Length: 234
Ligand SMILES: [Zn+2]
Image (tube, rainbow, N blue to C red; front, side):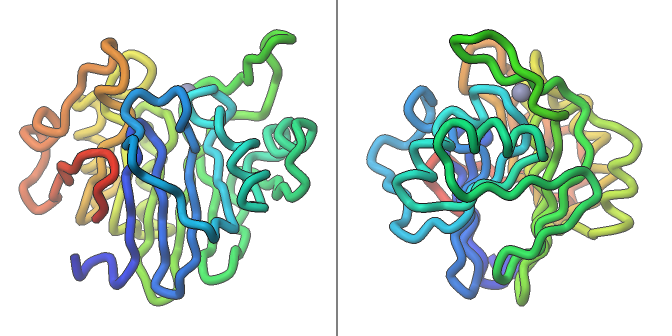
């Protein structure tokens, strides 16, 4: 698709997304692999995976961050407290940042933005405070601007994300129950005004009932809703 200007966005089920830039930089967002029932079975991650980006500390977004980072010698970017948590679990290269900040990772400027969601990390020792939930805007050199909303409902300050960064592609949760569903995501689409929406966080588990069709039926036809299977790319 021309809009992506040579950038490849591969959906790996749930909120896990692999971004490959025109320059060849690979970034993996919210790795949920081993326990992700929708992760494509025959898919292997690229050998070169310099960056892993995390939106928040819930297991279905971070559970494979440590093993994947260790295997690929990746740097893990997350909100400050979550980066610290990941670092204490054996990842040597972490990048802690916070809402409103931008970090340049090779040819990608990553800006952390707000999300409306909770964000504890739960392990054998209980629930830990690991900062707040966030979204990520990826401004790719010679490529598009991508927005991965993480887990969130719609909020009116999505208008600020549109005004500041002009995302052409919005990756939005639509499953409901833990995040917004299609009804709320339709308003998010209006606020963000992207050209393309890649729906995330639906169909993985039975409560996540929202569908791309329900979203598409509620938004202006100028905004295209991508309907792909896990393992496929736009
Ligand atoms: Zn969550």
